[in-house]
Length: 419
Image (cartoon, rainbow, N blue to C red; front, side):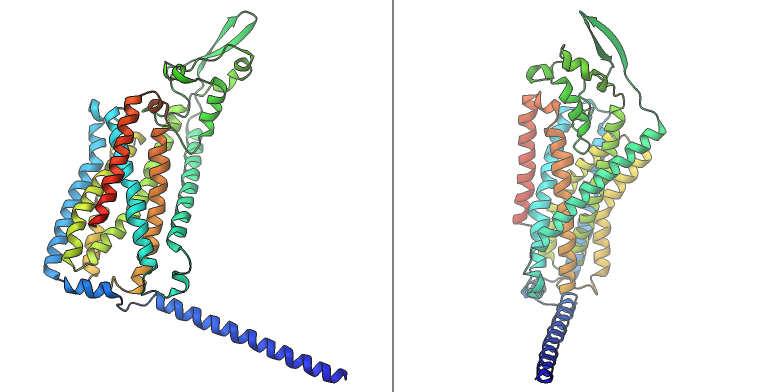
């Protein structure tokens, strides 16, 4: 009886293991098949037929040369305006006009991420050319954008910490002068510093640090300026036991250094995000042989490049780089999209933009670029200015900046109708 049971159990285990092996092999074969389909370079889709109907290589080449010239000129003008204009009173980084123009540029960048890059990524990664599993079973475009935004936050934070420690090693922190003021039975320590009219953590132009906000929070929690008091001169220290017990913590003299560190990090991370999607945009335009596709892109990309350059140029100007360093960053931004177009033009003869592989690569890069642009526009451009003390104390500047922000986002969004 026991031998029969052993035989039965052996047969059952053998059958079960056979089922497991069969399922595993089927899944493995299916997975390999899906991957091979996803990296195929064969043309597919109805869009390819539409492009062929408007295909004209000579006209497309002429339009690409026009695009390179126009985008280069608008990019140079955009990034150079804040760098050259910082010596002019109305275009200095602490002027109201600059703040409003930067808000408009931030709206353009935000709309680029949300309205242009992210939908394009979703369209590419859910294209009918790609296998339904896994591309149509999971929102990869939003996932990649989220990961990119979180990684950008990490890079932003780590870079800020690195530059802060580097600054501390190069020069010791400068402490403000203190004068002991005798008031009745209490001695209140008051800081005498020419920069004491700024809230610690606030930038020269009234902007606010976002990463590393704890410094401002620590200062604010002890001084407690409210309403009009916070806008009239420097915050007054309350004359009570609370202010006495915490007054020693306000002796920061490195505010300017921290401002500069944040601008250095913001400008470099912003350029990284802009360059990453500029390459993809340039390649996409360059490989196209359809004048119907290229024509609307020239105007849209020129508009986008100018204001994107203006935002980057403003950050570079605020970072106070050397002239050589600023020029190199500006030039690198200005030539990225034209170089992408030129590279795409060279690859157009053997690169197939309608293949599954191209769709996957384009979709992933568009998603990553969207995440970076959305993070940078919301955190380092919009929040940094709109949550500042300067903005809260100037109602006229608030109205103008909000109008500029919505106008920039609206105009850039409307371009999606044509490009």
